[in-house]
Amino acid sequence: MNAPLASSLRDTSEADRWSQRFPRIAGGLYLSVIIGGLFAEGVVQGSLIVPGDAAATVQAIAESTQLWRWGIGIHLLYLVCAALPMYVLLYRLWSRAWPALALLALAFALTSAAVEAAALLTLYVPLAMVETASGLAGLAEEQRHALAYFAITLYSKGFGFALLFFAGFCAATGILVLRSRMLPRLIGAMMILAGVCYFVSSLATVVTPALAAVLYPWILFPCLAGEGAFALWLLLKGVDVRAL
Image (cartoon, rainbow, N blue to C red; front, side, top):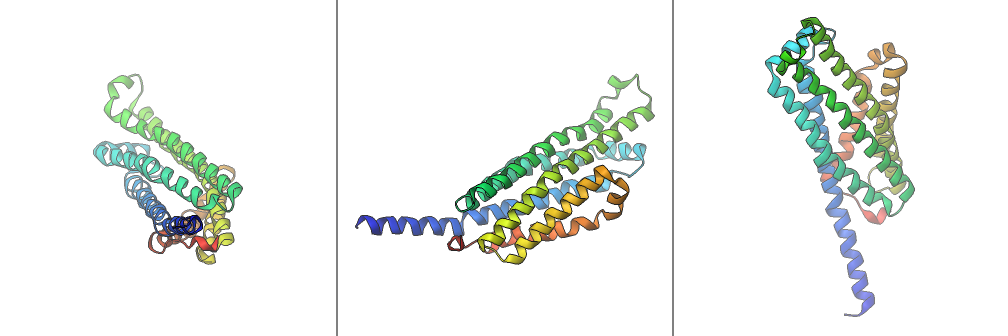
């Protein structure tokens, strides 16, 4: 076999691997991140946190400590085992054609993951309040409840800051989709819209909480639609690297 033919076959094999394997893995990982987030945020926190009622929230967590632990554990697992590998795979996919924009998307994603992971630490405070009450004997019960609820509030703010950076990842990814034509342009536009919605929601939480309360949760629906479409297309269809 002559050298040019061997080189051509290697190039074809590499293209096939990219178009059939790695993007599908990234799509599967992305889908697991979405499912894990819905469980941790929607099922666990949604069922145990009582808005505006610290005592009821602490009582609910005390009665379902294992569920609360699973919420934190699943959150950590999908960040470390799914989100980070997925970001690297997507960077590797885009970086061959648009290295600067791909690196920007990766930087936004990794920063978001780091902020989100740090914010998770505050969710352990309610467990500490329930399980080590003797160490907090100097605080009245109402004070312990208030401190636990304050920690949960801090987590929500930290998660909002993480989404501010994640908005940059979504927008950059949407632009990459539009430029590459490896996925439908509609999905690229949906990812850009997701980035805009995350940015507006997160910034409103800091600057105008009243507006954020009006927008939530409706403003997050385009985010779920855009990310879900992106993840499912990668998983089920893959990409055609010849469109790069």
